[in-house]
Amino acid sequence: MLRLNSLKDLADKWDMDVLYREGYGLKIKVKVGTTRNRERCQHCYRLRLEETAKEASKGGFDAFTTTLLVSPYQEFEKIAVIGNELSEQYNVLFYLEDFRPGFRGAMALSKELGLYRQKYCGCIYSEMERHIKAVDNVRAGLALPNNK
Image 1 (tube, rainbow, N blue to C red):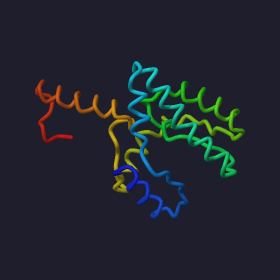
Image 2: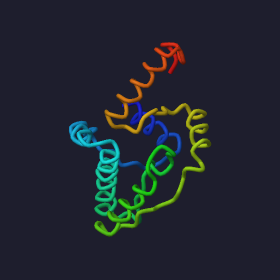
Image 3: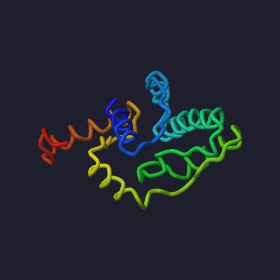
């Protein structure tokens, strides 16, 4: 909800038209989590991108893309392959650009704009791993419990 509300705020500030999809799809994400990490991520990329490609094709858009392309923590090459496959399947261009060099600047801008900055990819397993890492850091004396 924090991420969604942040997008809505930005859309208002920048006067952007945004298509919103109701529901988070947690059940789908949990099913994805039953595979090993790499397989889980690739499956999740496909799920996310396919929904986007379907909407782009149905809506007559010129292209579709993903914010995953800005993250240095995601598998860029896998996202590119999946995006291009879906581009052919749904007959809509996959806009592929390596946005990773702009990652730090994007983070600085999001902070300046007061946007929510999620510290995990979005799946329940990534969130769990983030919390486990934070607990491990506290136990190791690397962080205080109130630090984020």
